[in-house]
Amino acid sequence: MSNNTPNNKLQKKFYFKELEKLQEELVIMHEWVKAKGLKVVVLFEGRDAAGKGGVIKRITQSLNPRICRVMALGVPTEKEKTQWYFQRYVSHLPSAGEIVLFDRSWYNRTGVERVMEFCTDEEYWDFLRSCPRFEEMLIHSGIILVKYWFSVSDDEQEKRFTERLNDPLRRWKFSEMDLASRSKWVEYSKAKDEMFSYTDTKLSPWWVVNGDDKRRARLNCIHHLLSKIPYEKIKYKEIELPDVNKTGYIRPPINEQTFVPEKY
Image 1 (cartoon, helix red, strand yellow):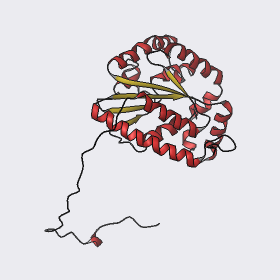
Image 2 (image 1 turned 90 degrees about the vertical axis):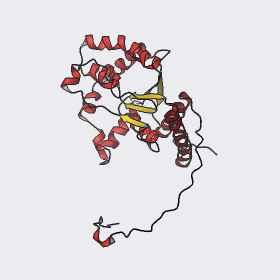
Image 3 (image 1 turned 60 degrees about the horizontal axis):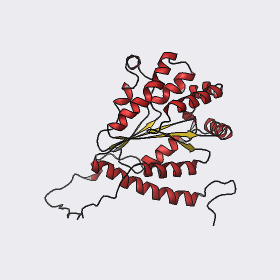
């Protein structure tokens, strides 16, 4: 039986079954990262509405937020603007036993900052020269670095933008910057291609995710991420729950507590 729907989308039943398997593996993997003191950094970049956020949510859904955390930095402060460009990102890098997922990263310089002229030409070209060396230092320090670029077709992006505008639960995803970016599609394409030419290196390659089908993109990305991090299943000690001793203490009357009204 095919796992595709008539429009070539994955069937929900198959998708959720596979997603559950992958999320179980993610739990095993992140427990190994913690036990062995590994340091993992994953970058998520790409077109607006390409599906980065959806994949990040599915990765973190069942993981311990103390082990796996998401960094989505806002606009740099006036103080941060005076610092070494990578400095604000370095402070969020993982310690031993941690995974950090960057929802957009230092590559802002080659995307929105370049296209919207938030940085100078000198700053831009300095970044392209420095970035491969910066990532090489991260990798040589023991960090496992994985970079994903989410690609989406023009038609699918337009469809998702329209859905966002008409959905009160997703309207917040559409920003003023998204509006400004629509008129600069060619500039963003050129910026992405130029960025790849400098930073898609053998040591730190870009992995492109086809984001037109959200379900496929999520499964493919998670499956690939698991393949990039060597891990084994941790053998847990057998645990016996002790008996609860309730003697020797009388609790206050329950009617003295203030409860949330039960509207449902």
